[in-house]
Length: 129
Image 1 (cartoon, rainbow, N blue to C red):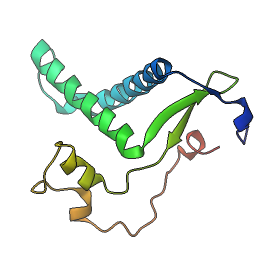
Image 2 (image 1 turned 30 degrees about the horizontal axis):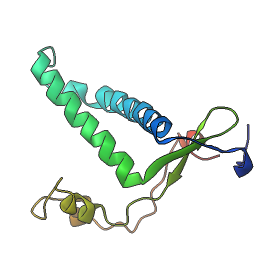
Image 3 (image 1 turned 180 degrees about the vertical axis):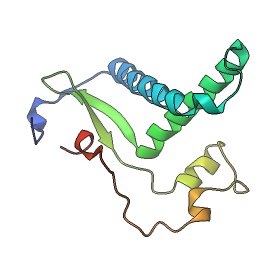
């Protein structure tokens, strides 16, 4: 397993390719969200309910990539996508400025302090090289 990235092997990709790669990533996030939340929503056998549910999960996927600051910028020699990542500094501000949310809604920062260092857990090997 490679443990470092040789930036000389990164090939920039076009906007069209970046969009395709981003859509592939969003689709995987949608699949994950569906897996974890489909049993909480009732009557998904009805097309309108399923469509509404999938739209909500898609919106969460899109906002999650934005919050993480993920932008796919290239590919390596193995065909892996290379992303630039810069998490938002202020998620609440972004949500309010972009008309997704407003100040009257509850955000995580309103409910708890973020002093503890979060732990990745048992799946760290999939995220850290």
